[in-house]
Each structure stands twice: as structure tokens, then as C-alpha cells.
Image (cartoon, rainbow, N blue to C red; front, side):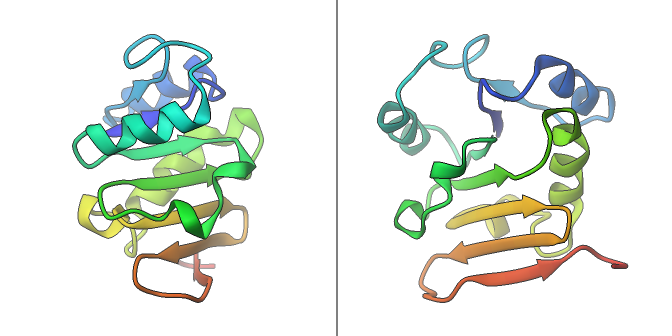
Length: 130
């Protein structure tokens, strides 16, 4: 499941769904608006293999790596969220649910920095063709 934080504009969700990428959003679909970050992480533990996309930098911490979900900080402008979510989801390194679990990532214009379960070092994946 692709779960969008409430800080990702709903029109970005509409763009994703128009391109065939199914998403759910915090607020309208799951939980309620204003859910605290600790409660949000607890919610991720209860959902089935979610990849959570947010614009909140404070989710980019190696201690949040967990085998049952993926966290993705979109370090881009709000109006670029759909473009970079799609770019991340089709990246050869991250295109399957399995490859996104146990991951905390920062998506930005240059590529993806990420921590992965059972690895200590921050890793980097460039965008294909870059």
C-alpha cells in the first residue's frame, strides 16, 4: 500500500491515480488529520507492507528502519511530489514492495539516499539515465 502523509497535496494523489498508482492518504482514508508522528509509526506497524511518503524531514532517521514498512521523505517541492513518487516506485532498486520494506529513504533531485535494514551505512541510488 502506498500511503501519503497529509502534507502531500490531494491533487498530487489525483495525478498518481490518473497514472494508475493506487494511493491512500492520511486523513481522508486512514487515521485522522493531525495524527501524531508516534501514532503514525504505530499505524504503519499495523498496516500490510505500507510505503509511507511524507514531506517531513524528521522521518529520515535510521532508527525508524523497520522490516514491515518503508518510509520515504520527499525532499522536493509539494507540486513535484507525484512526479518523484512515481520516479521512486519505478526505480529498479525500489520497484517492488519487498525492496521498499525495511527502508528509510530521502528522495530528491539527485537520486535516493537511504538506510536499509541490517546495514549501517547510508547508501545512494542515482536516478536511471542520470
